[in-house]
Length: 90
Image (cartoon, rainbow, N blue to C red; front, side):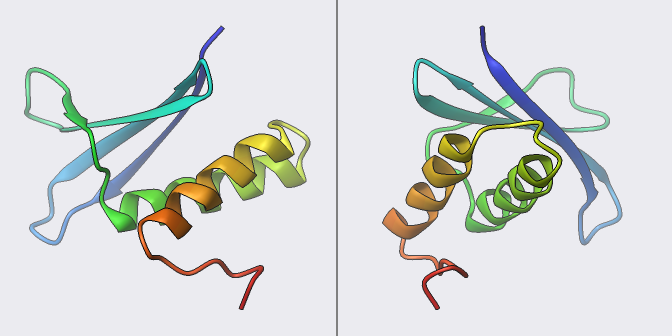
């Protein structure tokens, strides 16, 4: 069963954007779309801001026991591999 997390944000141009992160078979896939777009855009290498937002979302869900610690670790590992910062290691 896929593990899916969705959130919305507003772009700098004022457009609404929906981001969906799905974990299946141990791999995360991110996709996004603007409100007016007919289809989803799949991201092979997600933007750092999207990964940070996913980490924040997963962390909040983990605190409420709605997701696993392994999910949090895997997202933090993706951020570290991209050269981002990990707040637990700082």
